[in-house]
Length: 223
Image (cartoon, rainbow, N blue to C red; front, side):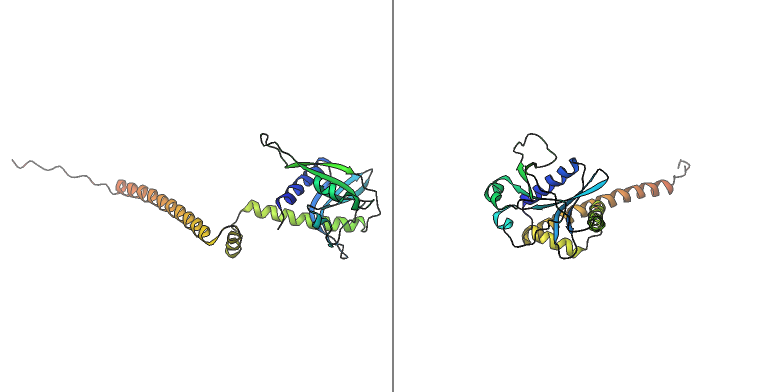
């Protein structure tokens, strides 16, 4: 599971790429066992395309992990929190650039992203490991995945299997909290349904009374 710091950097990096007018997508699986790029951006410049690969690292152990680094583009970057950069900057290869992440500290302003990025080390341009067509193919495949996810969110939970929903809830709540939440939800929904049915029945009763209303005939007095 991703840490909150990782999520904050991902969000900031995505926004950073958009501000640079790059096309961007996260978690792009590349062929030939090249691994998964944390973020891949494409820039059109002078009639050609520049592919940038970004690897996000948030801890020293993460940075020194033996997991393969997917630096396959023209320009490649580590994206690091500033304290981590200070610890590992001597270990960064000469050709790899670095974007340093710093969080915003003000809580008074509603900011669109949690922090900002600064280029502290420029990358050296390299010959990409994949052709332009292959990059585009995998970029579009990942973009389609994100569009599908967005459409599912837009449609809500109606198409999510019940078992999957319960599993997700069980990860967030303990058994007692889960039971209480479900009971409260069902109780609220049931009350709402009964209230709606009651209003409907009252309206039906009023209409029936009007339809079958009878009048008593006048009779002669007994005297």
